[in-house]
Length: 373
Image (cartoon, rainbow, N blue to C red; front, side, top):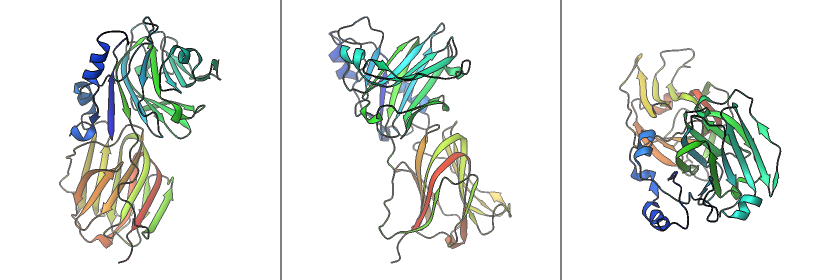
C-alpha cells in the first residue's frame, strides 16, 4: 500500500521555481519504510516529507484562488482522500470538488463535469452537495441547518475523509460519518481534486484501497461457514473445532472506537463466564492499538501489544484474515501481515466458538478448512 502526501502550496506554472520545487519534493512514501507510521499517524504525517504533485493555479489565471490536485491513478472503489486543515476564524464558505478529468484547463473550469461538489457554509451551519454536467448543475442536496460537525465550524481544525464507495461518496469528519452523496458520474472518471475558500489546507493524503485476499484458498478448500451481514454481538459455533490451515476471512467496516474478536474453548461463553479464551484481539481506534491475550483458569494472561503498523482507519472498510497454524494464529489485514499470536491452548479441536463484539459491522464472514490430503 502506498500513501501519497500533498502539502497545500500555491505554485504557478510560469514561476521559475516551479520545476525545481516539483523535482525536489516529488517523492513517493511507502508505508513499508515507515515502521511505526500508522501507530502514531498524526505525528508521523506532520514530520513526513511532503510530496508536491500538482497543486497549482490555472496558468492563465494567476489570481485564481482555486488549487488543483492531480489524483494520479484516479479513484477506484474504496479509495480514500484525507484532507487535514483549519477553518478560518471568520469563514463563510469553502468547497471541495472532484472533477471528471485528469488535466486542468480554463475550458474544464467553465464546461467540465464535476462528480461531486461539497460546499461548507460554517457561518450558516450547513453543507451542500451537487454535481455538474457541462455547464448544467444537478439537484442540490443540503444538510440540515445548525448540524455541521464542530470541526467544520469557524476557527476549528478538522480531518475530512472522502471515500469512493460502490454506490456513493461517504464523507467523514474527524472519523465520524457526516454525509453521503450518491454517484451521478462514475467515480472511475475522477482524476482531479480542487479546493478553495475560507480554510487552510495543511495536508492531503490519497489512500488506495487495501488488497482483499492475503491467503489464496485452494480450489478444493471446504467452506465451513459463509455468513452475510450477521447481527452483532455474534456468537458462532464451530462444530468441528479448529483445524490447522483453517482460515477466518472477515469483511467489515469500523463503526466505533473499539471492537474485539475472540475464540472460546468448550462451553458457550454466554452460559459459562469462566470459559477459556485461547485467542482474543481487541482493537482500539483512538490509541491505534491491538491488544492480544488469552483467558485461562479464570484469569487473563500476559497481554501482547507490539505492532509494526496499525492497519485500521476510522469508519472505513477492511478485510481481515485469521489463519490457524500449527503453533500460532497469523493475522493479516488488507493482504498485509500484522502479527502472530502463539498458541497458549494447543488443543485446537476443543476451541469451538467465535465471538465478535463492539463497534464494527460485518459484511461477510467465511470459514474455510484445507482440502484433505
